[in-house]
Amino acid sequence: GARSCVASGPEEVEACRWELERDMDKFLEVAEKLIFPYRWGEYNVLVLPPSFPYGGMENPIYTFATPTIISGDRQNVDVIAHELAHSWSGNLVSNASWEHFWLNEGWTVYLERRIGAGLHGEHEFDFSSIIGWKALEDAVSQFGHDHEYTKLIISHKNVDPEDVYSTVAYEKGFHFLYYLDRLVGRDNFDKFIPHYFTKWAGKSLDSFEFKETFVEFFNGLGDESLKQKIATIDWEGRLYSPGLPPKPDFDTTLAKQCYDLAEQWKDSSFEPNLKDIEGLTANQLQVFLGEVQEQKGLSAERAQKMGAVYEFISSKNVEVLAAYYRIALEANDPTCVYGVAELLGRVGRMKFVRPLFRALNEVNRDMALETFAKNRDFYHPICRGMVEKDLKI
Image (cartoon, rainbow, N blue to C red; front, side, top):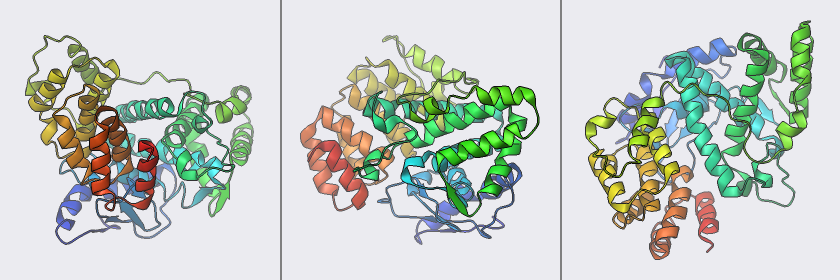
């Protein structure tokens, strides 16, 4: 782009350039209209080797990114929209401590989805939120609905922040901001966004300072109806209640086809055809697979058929492949474990590695331990340590 370049290995850089060049300038333009002009000069991306444990890391000027976003279909570049949003939320304005990490990530997910909507229409905001809600449900289920780590403000006393880290800060933080957005109205909330990032630029804050900033801004507009709405916010409940927040009514326009297809798979006599998924994006395939996973009860034979007919087992998109393998593992498909082990040997991103190891461990602990031992030195130390905890070794 005009203000961006991409760097990677000599054999990978051309594919990286193709994947990112279409959207980079557009991401910047939408973000600047939403907040205010980008303050870091250049915005570049370094695509790292596959052992990199995160989707991205928001270093100013140079985002570090996972190679799993380079899927040859430009379907996973929302990671870059997320990391770009960190140029305001996280790098320009930051949380004061790990207890208030949601201020970084909740804001960043919110801005990422607004950027997506600016490029692809409002339906995209809700569709991305549907995918995020599934990830939040999984995280809350993994910890337990009453667990301390499912709160927005989490006590970090005598705990390792890596143990606390999950999608909760991202998605539950997003839902708090989205609730505030709906409460005051989009036009009003859009006035607050640049105010917030201007007021706190170059500083850090905690949740209580955020509350003070929000209340002060909207009470200062002189709108009595807004004041009454602000007075209804249960700040204590929103910040300290564990578990899932209230679920909004999402626009399911882009998800309906996924839901309908998943419904057909409830019938064991349904005969799939590759045309079933014709025209679906990788994100829509993830929603379909997420729905099938929620339904449970798929036989090993049916899981194999899904992977073969829909060509999931040969997908170059790791998001799709990993989502399919979780279904196959839960269906106790004995043939999928070899593909899972192969994937775990070439991808180090914890988003995929940890749930796949947990699922493989349930089906075939010996293979899970063998796969981990074989690839132990490939994984980043943070990833390695978390998988050891997951496998209890």
